[in-house]
Image (cartoon, rainbow, N blue to C red; front, side):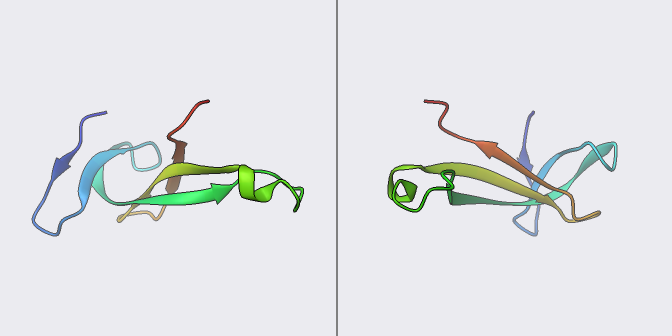
Length: 66
């Protein structure tokens, strides 16, 4: 999936919901994957979160597949 910058500093990416390339807001998030509170500090992983500026669909991709 190629991404390009436009003037509003969004990323243009393909949107499965819209069926075409649209502007997306992109951010990185650290998410806790463990449901157990005693292990939560060890189960945080980085995710790339992309939100379509046209339809609002959000997609999260885990960046570390360890």
